[in-house]
Length: 526
Image (cartoon, rainbow, N blue to C red):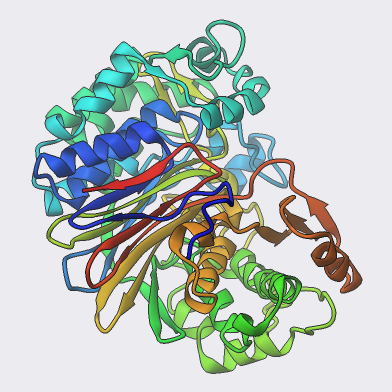
């Protein structure tokens, strides 16, 4: 029985259709489309377009997108909507530009050709039922006429105020009054409304070609970028369907997009965890085992995951019984260890939503600028804020994720989908930059091992082993903290919430939805 004195909220239940997003206006827009007869893709794109307006530091049309889509009663297929580096990009070219060790977030070289719009149009063309002019109505209205800023968006905006002020054009759009907007204030982006209208009318060509594509290329070139109009024109068809990767966990098949996303890391964590009786463990024990599995999986992620053209067959190799057994054997239940590669080879800000429509079609969709406000670089003629996904590239010759011409970087954004008996039963996703793979595993442990409802699973305190320390949220008990410290973990109490999530589960008689309590959003259905 749910504890109604807990101060938390229960899962949302509905009988016919449901959408879950991290922003109330996005959820409302998607629900409106579902009620008007639109399908999961129509509703998902309507919600996503709205969120690109009302949550501008987390996502935008200048970002990238991944999706898992499962027609009713079927298994999912994956859509890769990640953009590529310019054709002229190389380690040598960036070194000549003065970069030697990494690509800074605000550098024009951190901007890859945005893949989101290509993915949206591919989804709509292949599986949508409504014209984009109808799907984008709410988003265009909010961009042109203004919207009310919600509390979590206002907090994130304020935390990134100094950063966004570094670009004069972005400052004019997002800091027009000299400060980040307060909760309840209004904000508008008329140029973004124009871009959404162009996409609705002309499809991806309205974004990547013509005056808009040429303007984006010219602006980045003026900042020292290597981008050309030809690079943007080629991005029109960047999104493509691929076969997802999967692993069985506790009798459920968990699906992820393949590399260049980090979904493989989520599956590695789950397969390592499957060797432990997590349901019988206390909070400290579960947190420790999860931390150790995360460190091992992320070591492999950082060393090996890249553009699939340079790491073919990687999922089969790393999810093999031999590899997982070797990784699992490195974990000491009593002590925190150092991550290591099983075969010892030589060598952030996001929104997620999910939808299930009346027919049972399920969509798991994620869209991101990577860092808060992406690269912070905004083209003043088009109003497009560019992502910073290229900051993931390495400047190490021979590294799988080294920058190169027309190459896609390793991505942190990953939609997920759980299936049982040959059909999808739960689209889910976790936001939070690098945390996402660890978050996928944690959410599924809470649901599948511990038997928590979706909302309860999301509301549990979170931890994340990353960067040499174990970040924990304040909700962990003092006894748990003491035990983790005794095991050798360097604890750091998070000053802001770790990640965010949404999920919808298809039960025999109804739909159950959960939406992140750490964000502004909600799950709604009818």
